[in-house]
Image (cartoon, rainbow, N blue to C red; front, side, top):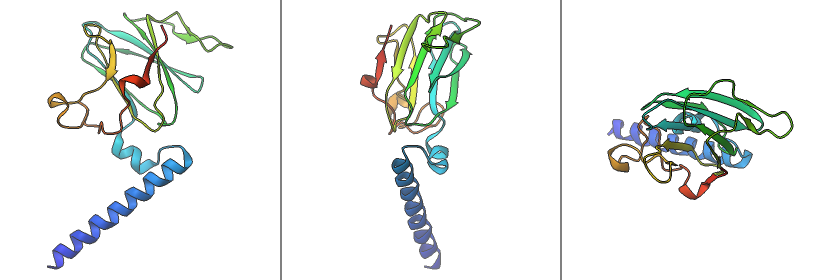
Length: 167
């Protein structure tokens, strides 16, 4: 009986703590540390193309680039309130930068998307064999697990309508 009481108190405390963390994150427009540790880094792209691609992420004017091999993933810790401009190069590309005044990605990516999903994770899959090429991750076991292949929860992931093609 004592073990049951301890279990109930622990569950209640965790529920209160997580609820408080979520409320604090929502109130400040950001993501709390505990909540971020549960929901993951906030951005992941899974490359299902047969070749390496290059990606360029522009968040608040800051550029991050990466080469992502076939069947590989790229993760980035982001604040969920931010919109991400995502440039995708169909092949590995060097010397990616952004223009000083316009913020445009150079050289010009083959595809550009805005991931406009405040308070949502941005876990996406790139697969040019499907339409659309970029779509929200569905997760393991045809989406029944509710988690991405990396184990991140997909319950608060962006929707297809929040992936806005720019080019």
